[in-house]
Length: 248
Length: 224
Image 1 (cartoon, rainbow over the protein chains, first blue to last red):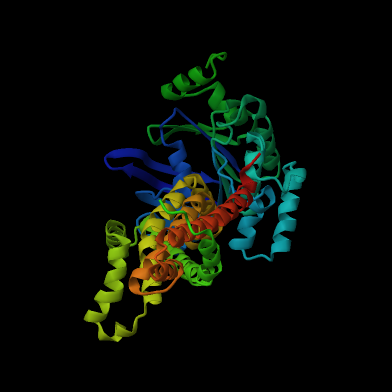
Image 2 (cartoon, one colour):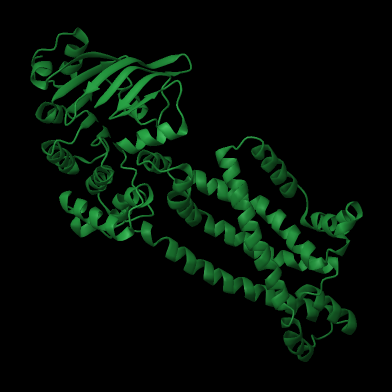
C-alpha cells in the first residue's frame, strides 16, 4: 500500500533522515513518536515531496517514485494520492470552511461546483461542523480549524492521510475534539500516518507505533508492546520522559 | 498684493474640466497596463525564472532609478531618433508608455512583497492537495496578495493621476496643459493653477473614498 525504501534527506552536511524503510498496510494506523528534531516531520513531508528527499523510493498504491529521478508529473501524481494535515492548520484564509474542503474536488478533480460542495457538506456533517459551512478560518477556533483541515484531507479521497502534529498548536480546551475525529476516521479504516506527542492517542488508536531517533527507525511494534516493554535504551529513555507517571 | 479674480476662477472651472477626461483616460490606461506588467514582473521575481528574473531586476532598477520626466523625454524625443518608425508616436501614447513602465517598476515590488506576505503554509497546503503552481497562485495566493497590495497600489494610482500632468511637457493639452494655456493668455497664473490644484485634489478625494470601500470589501473574510 505504502512503501518507503531507503528514504534519505540531507541538508548540506546534516543528515535528517538516515535511510527509512517502512511498509504501511491498507487501513493501518501508524503513529510516529520520538524526540524533537529527529526528522519525524521531515519524514512526512518527504512522502508527498513538500521536501525533496535526497535518495530513496516511495510507493503509494500503484505509483512508485524514485527520489533521484522524479518528474513534475510524478510529484503531482504522488501528492494527489496523499493528503496532509498541518500542525498550524494552514486553511485557505480566502475561502470559507465549505470551499476549503471542496477546493480539491473543484480544482484538481474537476468536479462541477455544486457536486463538490454537496460532497463538502457531507464531510462537514461528518466532522460535526455542518453549521460552520459559511465561516471563514479567521472566525473559527483552533480545534474547528483543524477539523476543517482534516475534512480537507478527507475530501481528497487519498490513499493515506499524513498528520503532522495535528494537536500541537491547540489550546488544551480544544485538544480533545481533534483526536476524537481522528479516532472516528480510524474506525472507518482510513490509512493514517501520524506524527504526534499525544501518547494517549498512540496507545489507544495506533495499530503500530514507530520510535524514531537520529533519522532512523529505532524500534517499532504494537502500542501495547512498545509502551510496556520497550527494548532499546533510547526508547525506554524517551518514554520515561514523556510518560513520567509510568515505570517503563 | 492684488486681490484674486474670483469670477475668472469660477469661469475657469468648466473650461478646465473639459480636459479632465483625457487626464483620467491616460491614468486609467497607464494603471491597467502597469498592473498587468507589474504582475508579470512580480511573478517572475517570486518564482526566480531564469534569465527573465535578471531582465526584470534590470528593468525595475532602471525605471525606479531615473526620474519619470527623463523617461518621458526619452520615449517622446529620444526613441524616434533611433527608430524612425516611432516618429509618429504622439504625446499621449508616449505618456501612457512612460507611466506604464515607471509605475509598473514600483508596483511590481509591492506586489512581490504582497505575494511573499501570504502565509507560506497555505502554499504547502495547496500543493498537498495536488494543485499546480499556476492553480495555487490564481486561487489562493493572488486573491490574498491583492488584499495586502490594494492600499499601496491605490497610492501609486493616485500618484499616477497627478503624474499625468507631466504630459504637458510633451505638448499634450490635458488638465495641466490647458491651465498653462489659459494662464498664459490671462496672466492670472495663481488663479489658473490653484483651480488645477483643487481639481486634482477632488479626484484624489473621490478615489480615496473608493479605496476605503474596496478595502472594506476585501477584508470581510478576515474579520472575526
